Image 1 (cartoon, helix red, strand yellow):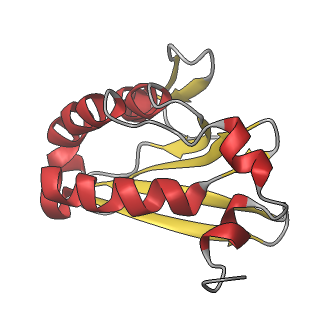
Image 2 (cartoon, helix red, strand yellow; image 1 turned 180 degrees about the vertical axis):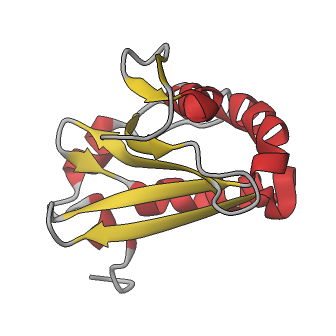
Length: 144
């Protein structure tokens, strides 16, 4: 993604804004998380932003991740970060966005590193058992 910010090579083998490197690397430690875009933001005006997807081999589980990650992150960092899940109408798939306040970035990165050691993604066999996607399965009515 073109950027006006200085970019450096992160451990995830991608060029990202220098101010977003630690956040991107911390997210990359989660199994099944693939970061796609990031921006270091502008201190006092815009937060650090990292867009990512959750899943592997065509099986996506952003809502399963969100149910666990959202409350765990909020408990760890309060309002230093904001987490959202969006449906990308151009790509036809769910994407997640993590926004991190500049002044709380160190605290958020520490929390992400800690949470990455606790996240256990759903097994591929569990996802394959369902004929629907992980998103559809998550919202099925009882007994359906």
